[in-house]
Amino acid sequence: MRVAILMGSKSDLPVVEKAAQLLKEFGVEYKMRILSAHRTLDATLEFVRGAKEEGYGIIIAAAGKAAHLPGVVAAATDLPVIGIPMQTSMMGGMDSVLSILQMPAGIPVATVGVNAAENAALLALRILALSNEALATSYKVYVAQMEKKVLMDDSGLETENE
Image 1 (cartoon, rainbow, N blue to C red):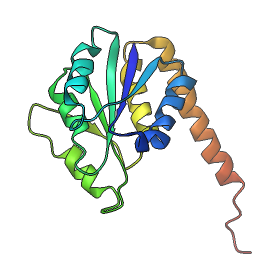
Image 2 (image 1 turned 180 degrees about the horizontal axis):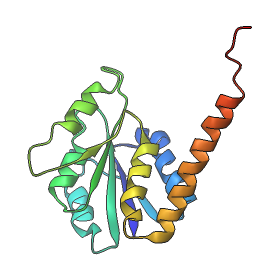
Image 3 (image 1 turned 60 degrees about the vertical axis):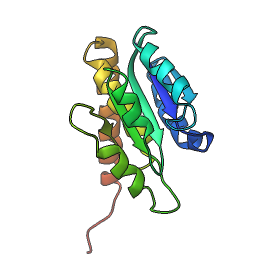
């Protein structure tokens, strides 16, 4: 199953690329698009409405400021949608967070932290792993590696004052 990664503008690409890289590491096929809820509404809806038939299982949508892209996408599909609020110059991304979080009943969008593209990819992987045993195994290995790194960092830390 594929993951669609949408972003409201090209300026979101440096952040969103982190999600793409993580999906690539796990061998998950993805496609990135720049589609705007405001400037390219028809193209956005056309892509989203055909996403399921094109083999996509999850849509990640990144947007800033008004951040309507994830909500518009969620309103046009029954696929899971993960919103990435982008950092902004005016409110540091809080405007984006609130816009994506405050969806009306019936139009859910899972929301990660500001610029948290890696967490969006990891959430997508967890969802896909529910029906893909190989991906579930790879994800468990990834989690074990994170645990090992933290424990190694901890063991190398000198905290006693003798």
